[in-house]
Image 1: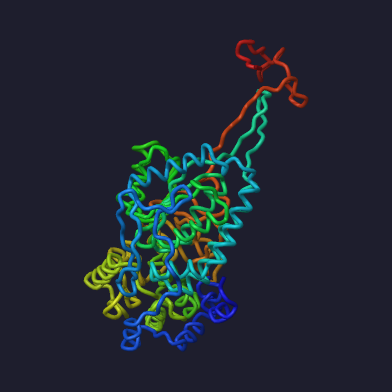
Image 2: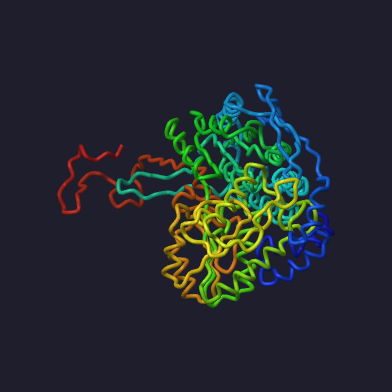
Length: 567
């Protein structure tokens, strides 16, 4: 559990992370500059600090696969390394699961579903177990946050104060649903008694990404378990550590063996085996659109398993004519740079009305220069390194493309330091619709600013994309807000705020940003099947046609007896 002292120190940061104190965000940023961390503009001091990273406040306890309630080596005996993005050095070697291990895990999950207590116990018992799990996650929040920060490069304070409370809340929320999942009784024209049951789907394969390891763990696992399913979870190979620790806590909470299985490994082997497996009833995936398409194909080629997908995005952030520019700059900065820009719904296309464009562009540059980049374990740091070398090089490639295609580079554009995967906060102005940085998901700290002159124009340009995950609007005109929010083809539209992920709010995308919705009551639909049960009633008291004798159709003609089935 986080100490009271730590909570007091980081309260301003928590407000920024949750977008609840955005009206004072500039003052918050200024205070952060005095905490000992450096903004990237103080290049020499910042680089020196990056060369001497802090020791993470956590011990790695679990590196094996969790299958059927036990931590075991992979059958091949192979291991793979997870790296510290601050130093590019190995953190730990983990058991590398492949198709054989996935098959063993699926069999364990199948047995736990078909023969075990989890789907059969009174739902209130699942409520209690999931709440115990949530309490343990809360108790070990500092440890889990540190593992995510070490593995992914995200700021530790962000993981601890901005993400872990949501993880705990997510499990408590769906624990609350576990004994409230039920069907309906349905009146019938035939006089039969009919009702529906909402039953668990069965064995759920779940594949989570590297940018929010514990958050995605919660979004996937909590609703699946609450509905009575069993799970085989494949972690991202870049960030496997926190899920394994959470798996140990699940066993401690009383989740039976085989109900939650966790396999670390690569997408091409373990992930592909999970999506093609004939005994997996449902797959949930968060990641790229490219891989999402492959998962849909795998479902079709195997057993037509149910699929939900939360995929890529290229979200517009629209700053309207009458906006308070200072506030708009701060919010747009948060929308893009949060989590090193490694966020599927990042506001990565910043549309600014022509009347405030010049002022916005200059202030966006100033805010980026002030952004605190550094060791994610240092208090006050806003931005850590990118997750790995591949992502680091990909982002630098997009920055080069922006320069070559004629966008105006205002600040940043290079790596920061000579060690680790740090990139300077980068802002481009005068970005055109045909530019690569305007159309493709960069997944990094690169803001692309473009000018617009009217509402109809900006709606059309904002919608001119294969994606439709999220959008942001900054305006003080309610009619303008209503017009734009209705016109945008996106699963979430944030108005004068951004990155609000309340557990009760459904999240998912239009177009190639995914299928289905996660979180809230809508998530239950992903993890249940609807069964209709029909039975005859003898002499029902309240049905007007309680006997087939003399039954007539709507025009008064007698219905032949052989067409009436009263059982």
